[in-house]
Image (cartoon, rainbow, N blue to C red; front, side):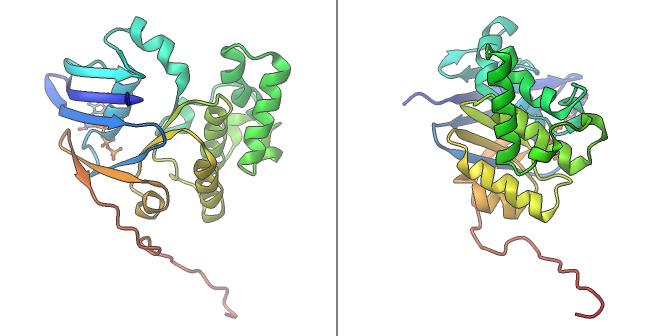
Length: 235
Ligand SMILES: Nc1ncnc2c1ncn2[C@@H]1O[C@H](COP(=O)(O)OP(=O)(O)OP(=O)(O)O)[C@@H](O)[C@H]1O
């Protein structure tokens, strides 16, 4: 079966130095692949390369079976990929939450009513329907994260690529996020330092180290992450 996304021996240079040094991966339909690894290893660069925001100087990038080399190749494939940036402020740009979440569907051919309905449903699916009328840039960091994800889900992509989705998200919202991602019917490429979240969601993992990818194990222990419990004084 054709991979949804694939990289073959991809090299990405920045200021003359290799950030990706022959990275290869393949994401199949229904897979939930986690990319883990230390800071600066090249994980964000990998995601950016997959959507054509960074250009490979060697190797091949294929999206949905199509070899992508130039902006002309990447552009028609991008609506099929929902990419959650590492920084929510790079993603939100409309005055209100509902406008932000409806933007993608509107831009890909939905009527205003359809886009509005999809946006409201995506917000409600994440338990944040009440944020619809709020001013986007005044949301908390965790709220912004969920709103960005709602915007991607509203587009009904084939693949979600998430860069640190749980950053700044509290425990209750983290569960909502996890449940929404479990319900998401497409494939998932997840970059995360949150081992517990990776163990809860991913079906496979790869380790990125100094620009190269290698298979990694997921330690599927229910309490892989620590649980610091804060008790009230009378506890
Ligand atoms: N715009 C840029 N200009 C120059 N170097 C950059 C730029 N963006 C990233 N880098 C460098 O490229 C390397 C890979 O960065 P990248 O953001 O892909 O790593 P990462 O694995 O996502 O890290 P983290 O876990 O900290 O998010 C790092 O050494 C980083 O300093």
